[in-house]
Image (tube, rainbow, N blue to C red; front, side, top):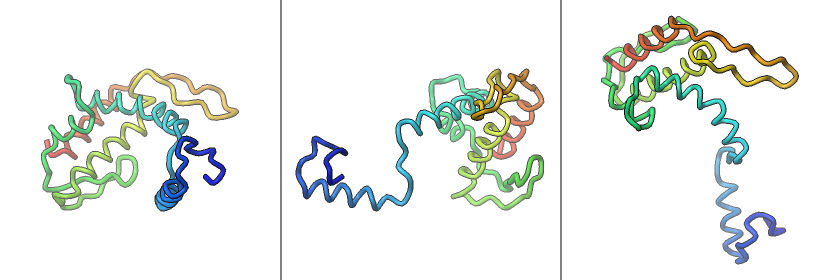
Length: 151
């Protein structure tokens, strides 16, 4: 920052010092554009699964579609391991976030088997094969969504 390489058009030293202090106070990693694009490559197929599970016909976000369908259930099923659930009483302030995250996690675990896309290749490994979409996973995902959303 002192060298002027970052934000070269910002020449006021006081403003540069304030900006540096603000940046250093951020408690998490600041993603780069490269990191953002890498994340999008992974999240795009997962979003396709989410849209399929939510049956979104309108041009809205996945979150808004889930919000529109969400009915606060009295009991929340929390998946602790694949197919293994525990129940807890639903709290109004956390039920939506918990069930929404669970559906995203389901789509992240199963997207290679749910849509016609291969997962990204690991460095030094052969390309993973594409799999035929598994209708059972779609059915199971819809059951998860219905149960967790209170429908």
